[in-house]
Image (cartoon, rainbow, N blue to C red; front, side):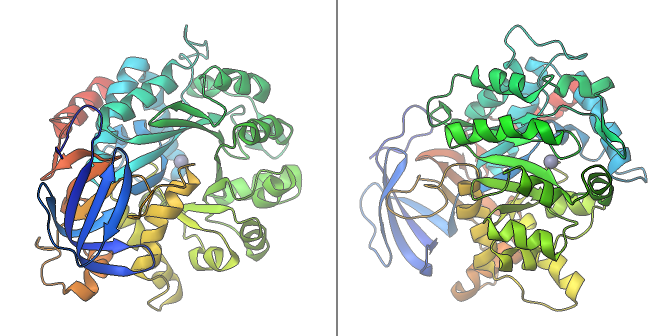
Length: 463
Ligand SMILES: [Zn+2]
């Protein structure tokens, strides 16, 4: 057995001081074995064996970041000096979108995905709408920008679901969809049939796989950006490949009002009537939904992807997380605009928002929040065999330190609570993705200087 940091993964074994196991809680001295990218056995209360890597702290499955726009990472801090709303922030985001090309997109995404790996994220759902050249002319390879993201994930050691996004309208006014304008021209494919033709040129197999680490998924940007009659080809493409289908929904009240004015119904109802909702679909945000919407979403077992750090950063509002979960929506988590990249912060953000809204504590357990960060998140991205430390599952491991200044003092019995409610991304010490070491002792093994790459790639874009 040889630990590996590059090349094809090989047979491995680890002994975790503490590990969270599906349906069994936290156990001590867990012997975990893998062959290639899959776990083969998991044994609690085990003795160490030769050639075993010791994992300190609490070992968790890899986290899923179910909603990301990699290039928004360039906006961090630069948007904090001003007042404004989601809509003024969006103008700043468009400025960055206008400056990127396939090369600068690759470098920025590679650094951002490396930051994610350092935070324990083993798979990212990249909601990708920056398709064409400024002005809207396709690149020689019309998927050059999407391929840059797939390459960036490979460079950073993550799996990716490329949620290729249909974006056709510049907004929804009370009298109907607006044409794309200015920076938005890069996002458009004229119509959804042309969108599907371009995405098919990604050359994925019958299961939507682009490469062993990458699969294609579909996205409808929102009811603001895709007119009702254009939704069907996107849904049909997702059905054809059994692919995940994601959509921004009801992040802002103005979207609900416009949808009501044009279509006479809520965004949820519109998506329901167009067959967008269901168990392979994720609605992102679901901030301003009423009881009827919640019932439609839960009845279809639609994933609700919450992005608490972005939603609070933009002043969006509070999603009814408990009601969505109670109705039947599996919850997932995303860092979205990357105001921070910390899935543990997203997880506790769901509980804290509920506490503030209801003035009471204890709506979601640490275990429930971790399921959103792991099994539910990976499943929503089309990787249902990831997110658990169990035989047959993808061999992703994340070690969270229990002796940092934030986490020290936690007894074994509350290790999970310490990780979810006290630890941060800075407490992630080691990360294994698909049987391969990606982070060791807080150092990324594939991208040696992540802060330097972030700094250089952001400066290249912002000037
Ligand atoms: Zn988003």
